Image (cartoon, rainbow, N blue to C red; front, top):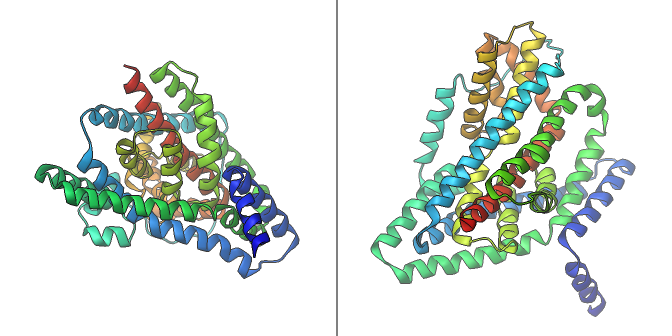
Length: 403
């Protein structure tokens, strides 16, 4: 028993990132050598399931606790971080439009695809507001983060207004308990990543790169440009400091896990933990991180713009300058409103295609192609979205503190 305990202590004393990289390599090797094996694949499912289960509770209690005990000075930072989230998504859409014009991609649109998607931006935004006022218990059960944020802020304000210090302390203590549970779950990340990588490689192989290589390269190239050039430029303009050490920390410690979990919700606890280790204000990041998982969708804005323009190029549609600008705005707002929809950014492609007069049946074929490459597209999109939540939270806090 003692040797096992000693090995476990040595394992947990290693850097979490190093342990995740070990799990990644082992999962890749096993995926190439072995056929799909359910017990190994289940490691990934269990890890993601545990994170998804605990994340809504964590967000609810942390946000309510933070609002209840928050002092003055948070308002400026919240305005700043929301502006950063939206600016990054808008610029990401512009990058996607320019890149799609320089490197046009056409798709093989064959038989009609089926599925449901929002018909207009109004549908998306109305759904967003309806989810906001959904029953708070239902919101937690269904991981509706718009509803969780809304009701947690309201409850926190009520606790603050009534000066119920004892009750607020109970909520704060419960938040500490849930945070500790999350830390325990995160310790199993290397095994979860092993299972996720094994499942992807053993089942899908690497064929997806060859079939839709040009489209994948365009999507990934735009996302990387936004993450490695646009976001650091925004960070530098706001702080007048070198943003790359912070950026690489966020990509390494948040982006890697988000890439393999493919879930912004599942990555919220990991981002919270990273913010804590960066020494950020818990009252601020406990709200800005779940908010970012809802509205900071720069990767999604890229996906919507690139896929819509690929359909336009395939159909021979001429895209004017003003239509392209409007597409950027629609992609940005649509990505924010679609964050709680199953299928995320891909289901917003028909809405964007409607700007070019492309029918829903044709656009849904592009959605079907998107799901084929989603093992790469969605992974990269989630990694860029989630890691930038921490990046912009830190930028907003440093900017305000430096004033």
